[in-house]
Length: 471
Image (cartoon, rainbow, N blue to C red):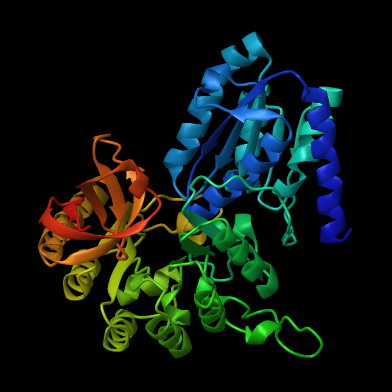
């Protein structure tokens, strides 16, 4: 069945469920684990579910439908899921709550086997390639009272036209591609998300243009490896590329021209695919934020080879220098895994050396977590947990010292801040983010929300900056 026909079919199921639920005042709860791709998927699930007549609440104990959108990158996500499922048994017995679990974790056979064995009261299991079929799965569960499992191992199609409920009125994420071809040895993603599939440029541009019309100011382009966008596909219309878009670089330039959008971010690129045309596009596109996320994972060439990252320490540093020379005001963030199999003290010192040399604006640090089904899990030279934690603490100490130093450069400068709303810690203050993604807290009127304004930074406080609104 063609994708457009499939979406029309699912819209019919949305209407059927809506009729079943009519007048019932039903509530739903959703828990999202993992990355921004999962968050984007959850926005689609929320859009679907609300069209079916459910209202979102924050308390799963009062929900008629509970949705878990799972992640399998780290082990603690599994523990969190199973803990929540255990808590739901009593609630389901009391309320008849429908329990639905989707996302990456459901593509792992040992996880679904455990759910069937230990949590048989789960109603719906769906995978990363069958999210679009949730209306059909829910309808069949409501009608037959039977449990549904809708997981496929083959790569799914790219489905356009699903309802979506954005979690912000000013910032939006836009998926440009699905899956990954890289097979890093620590990572389960290619096995659960499948191979790379790029969305058609026309669909991406139309989505961003619509967001601009609705008043959105900041767009984040999402993909497991965004700078390989269209690498494995060629979209042709009447013998020509769509509006000249044939790469990630040309996509960035096209989105930069969309009126109303003021900031463009993207995650995550892969260092091995960071080509010169992408660097030029970032440098020449005024709306593309100059904070670039460039995952390192390890500073050791030996560990990078074991990880199958396909670049060396030296190549990474050369890329950083090239980017700094070409892109004014460049700042960098990164991911680092501590304690991967076989990592020696010398290897870890290499990581510390790269961190000292690059001086990242933000570092997302992770202790290596073995994932069943990956080559890394089968390696015999695993690092003891106590050594992993000691290395993590050393890296954390270095990163925090650099952040404190970096923050000083913001004091007494004027920053353009996208105002997100009241601060979570003090509702009398507003919070927003700079182009380099720094959190800024300041006094201001509520009507400043959703605007980009000038803020003078008056002091730094490790994890945030304090500012003053310049009228």
